[in-house]
Image (cartoon, rainbow, N blue to C red; front, side, top):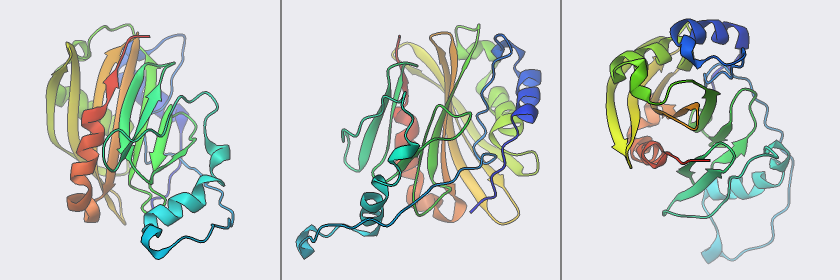
Length: 239
């Protein structure tokens, strides 16, 4: 598991130097994933007896047992809901900030300072998805530059710690219902692990949205299709 240490001051300086347009009254919320500490408090809970035919797998058992202890972690302002909209996925909806996405069944929502919403796997901590929202005066993501340029800057300055070696694999622009999104894939190498990640960014409602999901490189082949579903499902709507 990665050692996650948050440094809002450093991130604020780095991000504003690269994207000065994303400032509004000095307000900034860091979107770096690996740099954030979080503590998940768990407690023993009893489960009712179920028949062998109803017995869930290991992940489902952990998800069931962890649900109650993790209730305190849920953001009281969150509008997430657990309505299964695609096999193996649940939906997250934020009516306040105007976005929605899918995440794999079994991932738990946790509250992390500086993040708008985070879901993570209870077994594989590097398998997670986070959404960050900050104000911007721009109207279109393309105003910041081409996909490769914007992706490189975000990866090096925000999405990965400066001590990690990063590599942009690909970046592209997609049009979804008339709105431009940038999607990119990258790896970030730490001394004891390598994280393979996907991100999508866009602008709407006077805000800059960043969704990032990923997994340990050793599990990438197993997880890449599910993580791609998460990224492709991210949508911004007017609020």
